[in-house]
Length: 212
Image (cartoon, rainbow, N blue to C red; front, side, top):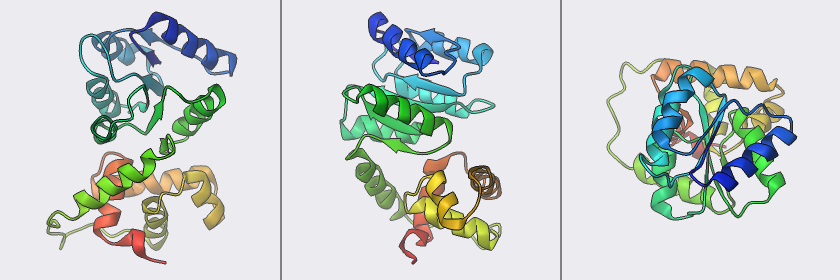
């Protein structure tokens, strides 16, 4: 699904996706429209602009990320401002790409978003990781009753925290991409977390990103 209030841009993005072999199940020029039609269209990935005429793209992202099943959101915005990026990621966006990106970079980002990878315009990934670290400095929760992860789940979690994509983790551990995704989903369930953002924060709180 493509959500953007500029008709020519929205149509161009949808056309590029269709020409690349993706099925565009819906387009919308307003946030509330996107929220309403998403339930019926059931997109796997949504490409969302932040600047919409009614509710913000952040609100749309929050709704889609919390849907059942959740929609993976790639924000495509003209803004690279820190606040915009962090608000989108905290709302559940899987990735954030600037509109200055080239066609192939955009299509690659959509493919990776569909696979569950975190995708960011170069330079923004460090910004997001820095925010994870800041949040991780907050007082830790009492976790005497924290669920136990298997050794493999912990290993996958550690690599997620280091910023590796699922494909890179699969190659590192000699596993299939699907197996890595299953380990991540199992870990999310055990820890009662909702998305990769919360998962990385948890891993950094535990210091897993600093282990060799």
